[in-house]
Length: 606
Image 1 (cartoon, rainbow, N blue to C red):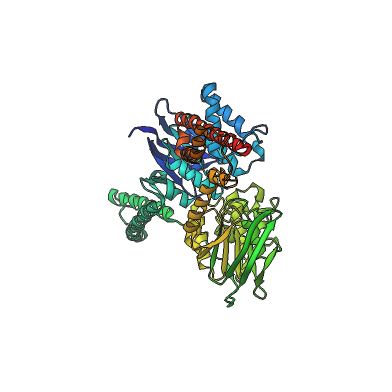
Image 2: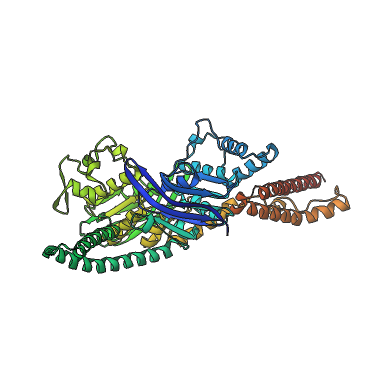
């Protein structure tokens, strides 16, 4: 397997902060690599160095001669005048695609990407659709190596499933940064974590995410054993130093120097073993009610669009309800209905007396971006917050959520999305609640914070209603799921995987071409009409037409299914052939229906 790229002992410093030092890494042909790590360790910078967008301060990056690289950043930026079609045309021209091939390739990719209106302005598209456009645009250049920085951020489940299929079946190598653990487990064959806890700043193995966790645990267990052994040795040396050797011989000076080196080494190991102080611990009221909220046969529509109908649900202490579905299906509407912030068309929602609800808003509208972090954490402007009846200094409260004391004077608007999410979680912790309703609390959080959030929700004695694109979290925590299928149908599912299976089935049904059945069309006619105006040959043709059309439609459906396979997108030559074959198959079906109509017209005249 040939090597596409390698970096040797690269280092990078930003604003006097060392992101990583002496980091070495390589990418081979066919690699599917997932990069993880806490926020701020330099993952995006590392990816940009590999892609050639920026240079390391030290070290060397070597690339295979003629290597074609594509890089997709976290933010998909386009000009106001851009449309999906114009963006693809621009990429096609830059890739050197001939004008003849360009039209076919672009139309095929537009179909594959699912753009219903390729001439719409890009700035009218959601973030998820702009991300999808970035991804398919990069494939026009037929890259040998693709870099993706958090591609699943803010994507709905349909787009994430599409991306998973694309990457799993790709012929090019790729490296992706992601906090989506389900996505990593389903796609990557090598997992790499950037962290100062590792020698040379990185640990990577040829395995998926879950298996990597076991390898990482083993690494830290060995490091802990090393720390224990060295700690005992340092204890003896410190005792020797305290006694103070009387004779300042060369031997004693050498032992003194060695003791100090040992102490320094122990400090480094302990720093590597250091864990985040972040601990999310939601407060509960201790209510004993068995039924906190009861939803009875609830139905809700907006004009002609059905959101859900006859939905029944009981929220009890210790229950976690996951709410699943694509963007825009009505998940947030359901959360408002549960809180009685929105009226139902029919049915009812019953709350236990004096019910206390803590709500996490995915839009973060409750955050004033002009105030300082200190004020956001302690809204009364004081130097402390009250947590479970005890006063905690605001600086200590900030450290609990991975904020430095120096950040307390920063405005909320200057903080990252992940940091703003942690502010909202910090506020929720101060509320005594019977129910937590969390609308996308995981956006922008790194894996370490996600794991802490998981444990906290699992320990929460009240009920939890959770909306999240983090499928790993949903699968692990949900006792039952309310699943939207995207067509107004809503059902209860035992777990995430059961809903996804049904959702995929529904998508497949929607993507199948809905053509009028010849049998239905024939049944609508008077089958007893005289056929005197048809010749003998035409009669035979008419009698066989139904079967011929069915076969032609089956052939068309097979070609459409082939076109919908994500791996075809990475093969422009194959896409062109299939697009031409698909056009011919559609033309054949249209011709047959036209002939069917012509023959039936003759029958009616007779």
